[in-house]
Image 1 (tube, rainbow, N blue to C red):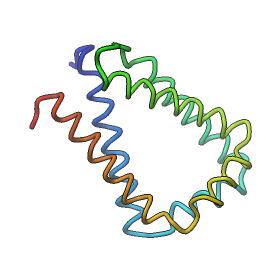
Image 2: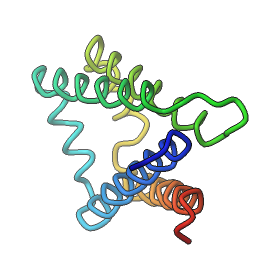
Image 3: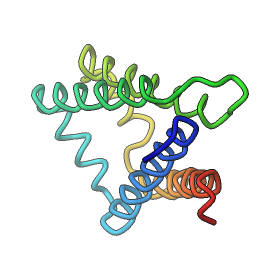
Image 4: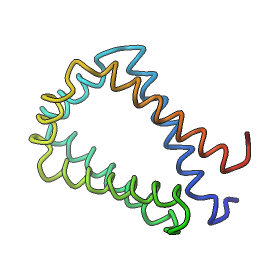
Amino acid sequence: MATAADIPAWIALFLGLYVLAACVAELRSPGGWDSMVEELERSFLLRLMAGVIALTLGAAIYLVSPWRPGDWLSILVSVIGGLAVAKGLLIIAAGDRFLSIYNRMFKGRTRAIAGIDAVLGAALLFVALSRLQTI
């Protein structure tokens, strides 16, 4: 059972694993993220569901992770949860505009973004495993 002090590390561990898995999927099949965004742009239902999922997971992360001012990992995890809530609300309220901004900035550059994200996911994983004293 995780203690309150370990919760941010566990959340960081699973976020790191998620990010790495998503990056591997994009690097194995480039363009998948672009096609996903195109499908989200076309479907109001998919945007609504993606927004609800982001909102729900972000709220759960934000509410479960303790805010400890001296602990940078707990602050980072809380901020990630808050940003996920904001992203979910933005996708629900103005998903078509939000996704068109994404397309203008990132379309066709997903391999580079996946590489950068993979480094960030690995860093989250390393920090989490260090905090959980497994490495």
